[in-house]
Amino acid sequence: MEHTTSDLDALVREEKRLTAVECHNEAWAEGLSAGIETDILAETALATAFGEILRTHGEAAALALLDEMREKVIAGEFEPVRLRH
Image (cartoon, rainbow, N blue to C red; front, side, top):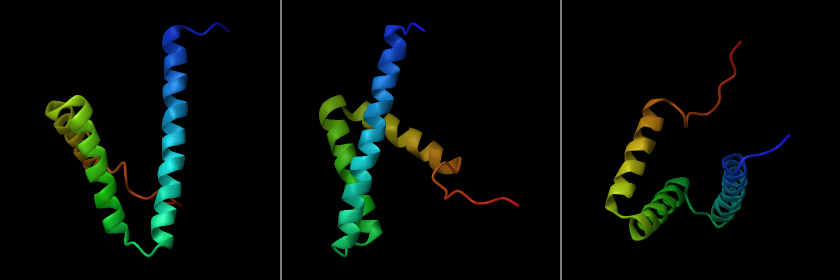
């Protein structure tokens, strides 16, 4: 099976995303081990992320990401998985 450049780009992006999730999970666990409350960890992570988006891509990109995240919250995408019987 032959992969297109687009396919390969998508695979690389997904691998980077998975690595980023792993890094964030490790940092989160370290923060919890240090006694930092989850709300402080979350606020700091968001502030750091949005600061970086603003710095590298500008206000419009940061606001677009905020809108996207808001829609995901409304859609319940961040809710814990619940078992259905």
